[in-house]
Length: 107
Image (cartoon, rainbow, N blue to C red):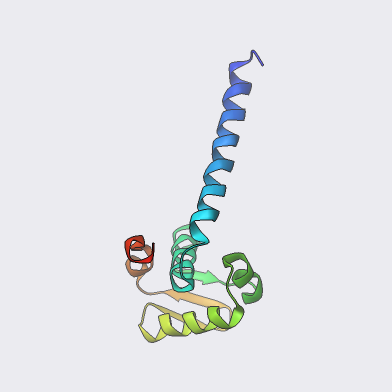
């Protein structure tokens, strides 16, 4: 407990866990459409504009929505020309739209 490197390591891991748990609690109250937009924005930032979606069941479960809702939201985003998707490949056309989330109207 006297080693500064160890204490720094512990503090950084605890802060990451606190941040992750706070994000999970915050996302629980958001509508499904916002959850999917936020998820796609994060994936587009990490993977680029071309995203390979794994199983939609697991993505829906992770977001706390049904697979049917996820498919409907993906179709709506496609109709708005925000994304293009076919099978498991999704191309983000408007990443700015996905990234701008206005939580004021949903609280």
